[in-house]
Image 1 (cartoon, helix red, strand yellow):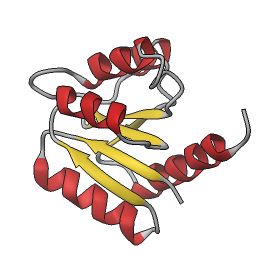
Image 2 (spheres, rainbow, N blue to C red; image 1 turned 45 degrees about the vertical axis):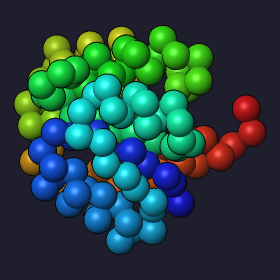
Image 3 (cartoon, rainbow, N blue to C red; image 1 turned 60 degrees about the horizontal axis):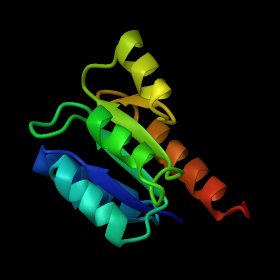
Image 4 (cartoon, rainbow, N blue to C red; image 1 turned 90 degrees about the vertical axis):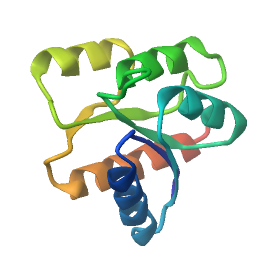
Amino acid sequence: MAKVLVVDDATDLCRAVRRMLEQAGHTAECAYDGRTAIDVMEADGFEAVILDYMMPDMTGLDVLAAMRASEHLRGLPAVLFTAFPDPALAGRARELGADGVVPKAGDFDLLLNWVSAAARRQQQPH
């Protein structure tokens, strides 16, 4: 199972996703803004990150760019979790190294499947 950081400024949604991940056997923590998320990722070993796109201080793309610029976080799997998925956003997310874009209104099974796959990749020898 994976240790996952959920980053979303909507605290209730962040907690709901965390609970869903925990019910599926994962360990999860919440960060409610991008700057805190980067600090938490740097300090703790996560195997996957779920990033909200629309946050006030840093967008999920801003956090993703900071992750990819960090030697420590560069290879950490990340998915953008958004209420506003569109092809341009998905393309930009892929350019920055996201593993995908998952719609918030979508099926949570898609998010759980991504987390499980990301955890398996992180646990394989590099």
